[in-house]
Amino acid sequence: MSLFAPPAMDAQERMVEAILFAAAEPVTIAELASRMPHGCDPAEALTHLRRRYEGRGVALLRIGDSYAFRTAPDLSHLMQRDVVETRKLSRAAIETLAIVAYHQPVTRAEIEEIRGVAVSRGTVDQLLELEWIRLGRRRMTPGRPVTFVVTEQFLDHFGLESARDLPGLKELREAGLLDNRPPPGGNAAEPDEDESPSGQSELFED
Image (cartoon, rainbow, N blue to C red):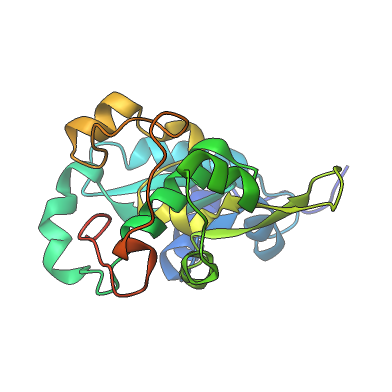
């Protein structure tokens, strides 16, 4: 039996709250445990803390395997002036990002097969630079091609807990993020100016 009992749960909640409030990036349970006194249960403290913030202007959200305080989703419109994204994505980058998000892990060849056109190195580099996609595991196939997956930064930017929370095709079309072009495999798409860095789109701009 330990001579030192862990702090009371309300004290553990305050510790978790303080750590998350001061953190620049989402924090994992393991990271919380490493900062808190021995015997603490950050997972339970997070559960209590999430309930305490329900209905408030700030919400405690799970982002992948991490947690962070974020503006309540229904109040995000109030912050639009403060979080303008100055970098715009080309149509090619938007399509590539969507394919990675919905088909991950996916190789470059598979992205090109779905899009119907070649994927330029600049398009992939832009998404890697934004830290919205990252390299995944190599496929155990000839040539062992590398795969791409979305990152926690991508999930955080769009307010998603995991890739399973991505909207369906119907929601994307209703939001104007997809058009009614034939899917790849029908009429082959022709490369256009969007494949070059000069082609810009307003989509995915806050």
